[in-house]
Image (cartoon, rainbow, N blue to C red):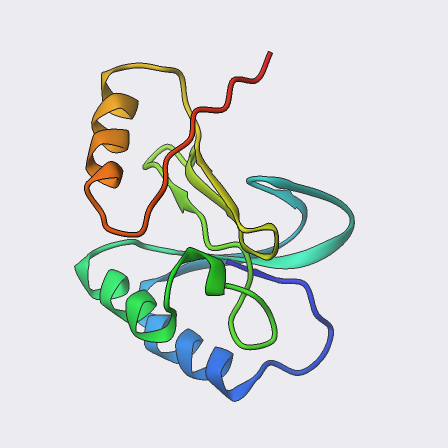
Length: 127
C-alpha cells in the first residue's frame, strides 16, 4: 500500500494502520512500486498477508479500486513470498493485473478469480 500525499493521514488510514500494526513488516521511501514509477518518493507499506489481514482489508474497502487517498492508502498490491508482484492494482486508473509467466499457477489464479461475481478478466498481451 502506498501513501503519496504529504497531507496528514485521514482518521480512516490511521485506524487501518493501527489494525494492521502487528502484521507490519516495513515502510520504505520508494519512487517505484508494482505498476508505478514516479519522479518522487512515496511511503510504501508492507504487511504480512493472512486470514486476519484479509478480513481487515475487506472491512476498510469495497474492492480493489477503492484504495485511493485520502480515504485509504493507494495501490493495494499483493506480493509472493519472494516479494515478486502477484496482483498489481492501480486503483485510480481502475486497472489491475496478475504478474507472471503463463503457467499452471497463473491459470489456477485466473480460474479462481473468474468465479468471483463482479470480476471481469481480460487477456492483455504485452510484447
